[in-house]
Length: 337
Ligand code: NAD
Image (cartoon, rainbow, N blue to C red; front, side, top):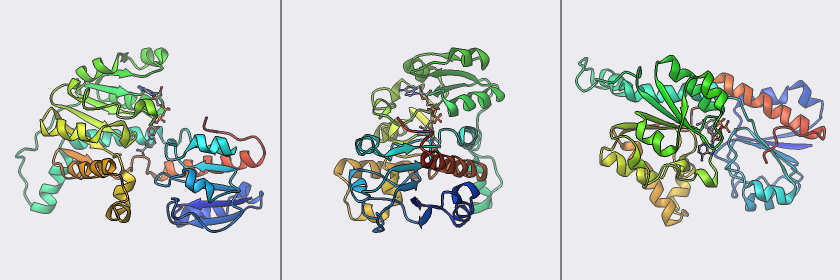
């Protein structure tokens, strides 16, 4: 089995090379630092399996250049960067890592919330960069007693609710599949998205990116949010219509936002693609709107970093290796439907 790993750091590479169970398969291991994109598909022939991280993109054009591919082992929970339907048509199995970092991302969600509620960045920046030790405009607000609106109560949303309860927050939530047992256990209430937006002081998004969640927060409903509320997004950039957020911030309808993900974040990472302007006008517009968000004084943007802890990355690698071994044994696990 010839397996190509993309975007592994040197420690992760060593871990894979020395993995006892994986070595038993006697695989030929290939490592590429770059993202996998249509213009960076390796010329190596006979690749049976690839393991990619977010940022890489497997579309029809990439698949065409990998004629022997049988397995994609995504090292992520989300798999919207993979054309799963095209893989199905080719009989390629796609596996993912369903739960490596629900607590990790939930903790990060609160890091973003606290950055905004206690103006942590401004406080830090003031002393470090300006040498000023005053409290002017640093007044924040308590989380205790405030209402958190959790959109998507799956693995991550559940832990976010758990932490919110520790802060003494009230929680309302919405989900296409409400979990009534969990709502009783964690003492929160399900309601419609509309009601959630109207009631919450902070709205936090934890849905996967699907056709049905594309621009879930959009020009129409962003103004249903409470005036002065905050929006947190650690899910996927495309869940929020960028221009709607920019305009609600401009009108001061939204007090601030904490964003670990942005629409077209791939294009932001890839300056070359941006400069070559291969993006369609509409996407280019979004990229420019992103720059407005990045520069906005009431917005905290981080580079898709919520998953990024030592422990979570180790769990990702462990499950990825299990996925590859299970596939090789003819009983694939964690297969994306
Ligand atoms: P999950 O599948 O366990 O939970 C998602 C929940 O969203 C499910 O309960 C589902 O029913 C619900 N849902 C789906 N469509 C909905 C809709 N239209 N309205 C309301 N609820 C809806 O997923 P998870 O593990 O909690 O992860 C959520 C997402 O977070 C992932 O899909 C991924 O995109 C993102 N994520 C980001 C990072 C990061 O580093 N920023 C890391 C991991 C995951």
